[in-house]
Length: 591
Image: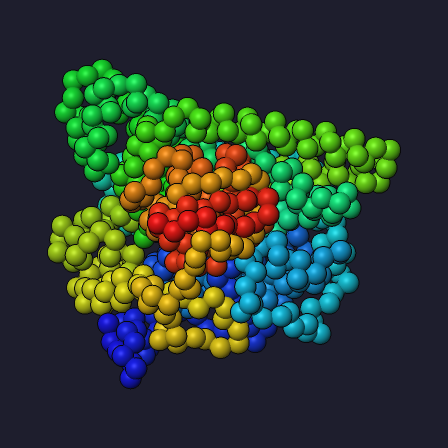
């Protein structure tokens, strides 16, 4: 670390910026960590930025916006060399201005409505500034057609096709150890067009996914009870919750076997070795089933869109820690049982609303269309994400094999350092690795330092200096006392009281016990298994369509999202009550 005049530490390389950092254009000046912190929680690697974000996902987002009618090709700044997921200080930002243009052009919507649907509500978010080019009758008409489709279709076959395509890549993966270096690089790059296709579909569905919930909210407000809207979204089956159901079954098997339970008692780092050394049939059975689990769900990871992230396949300890937590939970935490309860409550609310609407044909039609669209598109969003991360993991494991070889040859110090080069530099790394050895070492050191800092929440018209980021351990968080009520966004209905357990790493849920309130910085799918045993969930970030909200509703777990700095403000061990309908967290007692 270097130091400023006031003694504050700054990330290494603060004067020159991080290699992956972006430049700002005039057309889209505002960028936000809102919702990005849910999907891109950690600093993004150099290769992840160039091969995933720029080469694959940015064109996918461009094409999705063109397809639904939000923007025209020529309205993008340099549409053939895109950077639609900007990076500042190593952290990825979502395009706030561009998404607001979607709201400005969407019939019946507004930029403010889009903000509420997709991004966290924060004081530092700048107000929308209208530009002459934002209004477009042609785009409004095309968006209207897309909206009509989203509110009337009953299937999303393109997501099923992408799912089959992604699974085929996993099923037909060659023996990576037998491939040449050139073949490993070629395989990783061959995933790029597949990723672009899957991400285009993901963004098309995601951009229209707020229509149904928004219409439900309007109907419920008209009936005098806006809180009903959250309960209507409960129990929607989503792909990203599937690992939790599979883990629960593995946890039950571990609980029923003395040999397997004893292996877990030794800790998640020792489980597999102990089971492999056992001659107990239950141990062999568990290993076989866990191998099947990794084949099906091993692509999931914390910060899973980045190649640098260690997926469950790469680092099974993360999945084993969650399975152990479920092993120690009683049957009341069963995701299937909680899900059934959630669905029953949703169906009861649906029946009640239908009765209250009565013979009002217009309202009834709106309600039924909105309910169907909400269930289809929120489920579709999660399927699309699963398709995307499955393809990314195929890139990841091929490049990690290359990294393993480079470690053996003494070129790099760790396997993950292979992700410290750009896509273009991969060819140099293959043919002349000595030219990049020092560069990779320096980048890896600087990259590691970025994890100690919080990114600014909003970038608006000016690229922030790395020195503007604050340390995560700066100790400046607000203090609370018994009776303090923290406000966030209503995420998943229900109330829960319990001991707050602040967990910063999904792979190391130190101290988390069944029945406690999980307080997390963000919740990409790697966090979902921890929801199962929790009495409730509180998250620093997240809007209506955030991953935490969608999955907690499917699992029937009360959730409050977008509680600013919850992991810093809520004392670990405090007794808290969360209300997922009202979006509040009450500090009942300090530890």
